[in-house]
Length: 277
Image (cartoon, rainbow, N blue to C red; front, top):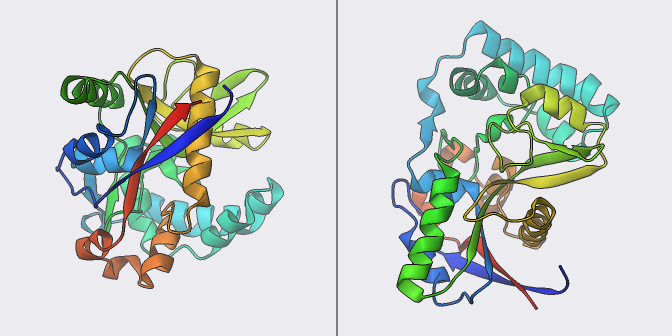
């Protein structure tokens, strides 16, 4: 891949169970044949209603240990620095709130101990871009969603695009072998490795976002390159919400006080058009 152009697809806030028509109809008039439409996974999950209210979950003793002992102290003060985890991540682990116990309980119930052992970003469960105590699970059938969006754009706007759904949670590479802790990923990336993949990833020099699905077959290296371009663009934006702490910084409120109206008050970029020049 040579030079490229990035075109943000700006929308209002995509509400729970709203579907993706808002995104499709905003991107449709902007795309050209051969474009990549790269969609972030959280708006997809929210549009499907893949939402859990963590306040409804009573933390078990195991969830308490995982949050307060394993993640906050063992990883925050010992293993995190030892394995050279990013300073920002270590800082966030050290200030994990009591609500992290319910979060671990949700991960345990939906994805199991293999994922709950991961100190943060467990199984792609996302605390950002939702109000209060709501979190988003991974999208359901991301491949089907990518194909639906591509077909909808073809049918409505006559444009042939490749849709890729990505998660910023990492894919690692060791010895030419790609793997991710996430429960799902495109073919060519070993998925559902959970904590063990995260631990092995501490020894990888290659850290990339994870493509969950694509609307058609693409060379894996090209797909990862496109995903990285998209991730870098999002991270360069001052108002990009990647974590719950980003959200609290933007709104100057604790997450429990952030509402749907708050989220609707800012511009959202759920997708990018990436065009080779």
